[in-house]
Image (cartoon, rainbow, N blue to C red; front, side):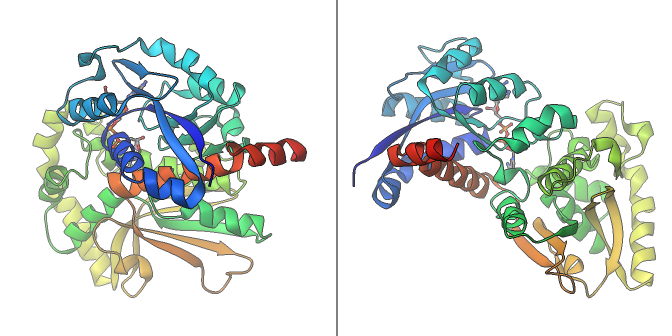
Length: 369
Ligand SMILES: NC(=O)c1ccc[n+]([C@@H]2O[C@H](COP(=O)([O-])OP(=O)(O)OC[C@H]3O[C@@H](n4cnc5c(N)ncnc54)[C@H](OP(=O)(O)O)[C@@H]3O)[C@@H](O)[C@H]2O)c1
């Protein structure tokens, strides 16, 4: 089979970016044999700068970049790093651009990439969860994919697209979309105090360094918004009610003071667990959306329900549709982790490359447009 070289450019070389680069290197031969695609990393960027070679970065440079970032060093500790501003120029090489950051700053470069004819794959939810007039072009663009933004490696967006493409009418979507908050609920249910459960989640690497990033519910709300917008409901963040798992009085204290104050929340949350248990229910952090709006927060669900059966950081998404009216279509499984997330992005990259980068695929796409 003739091989087609497909340039890829990484924005972000953290846990997902690093795992993806290793997967690209480790699966090169398999991918070439199965699909004829030869993925070629031409650029790697972090906040400090860009390593770039339009002909493909050498194996030595890629290894050095992986080693540096795994050891907590920035890319500008390596020779040959250019300014981040050079990313715009690198788009002329026609790469698939990967946003593997959690940055609020990437929207302009994503737009520039699409305008330059590049394809884009996102792990970053933020560009998709801003005001609808800014996010709409991303949802509507055929050369942009974002599978891992909800459910990590689980085919949640693909499942939803399948329902829509086959003419089903989605009426509501609900689920547990946060591994971190799923873990927290399981721990609270088994009698662990709120403060101890949050500390444990931090030491297992489930939370951000400041646990309020997860406890605020903002990340789950972004995922709920992405599901709603994919379903064709152009909701805004203000259309969702979001329950934070800490009081507003602790929102602006330092991260250290927050950790010190957490034990005051032990009894209130233990009380909510007891109340739910007395009614034959368990607490889960549930996202619900429909065409009019939605909610994200703690819900007391029946003990025998599939949400109650979730343990630890598992994710669960249920699509209620015209066809799946009595029992919803459910996608469930591990919904976080750099390896499964990276594999999900790799799936998006392969999908885009097969569709837009193979010579005959380009001809077909041009014929269609
Ligand atoms: N981990 C998961 O299980 C998972 C699952 C689904 C989705 N995601 C999403 O995937 C994304 C990456 O997650 P992660 O865990 O890999 O995060 P991470 O370890 O914090 O890595 C983020 C990377 O982005 C870089 N970066 C930040 N701003 C940048 C900019 N403006 N330009 C270029 N690079 C920039 C950072 O550089 P520095 O190191 O120099 O700051 C770092 O290399 C996030 O949006 C996350 O929500 C993660």
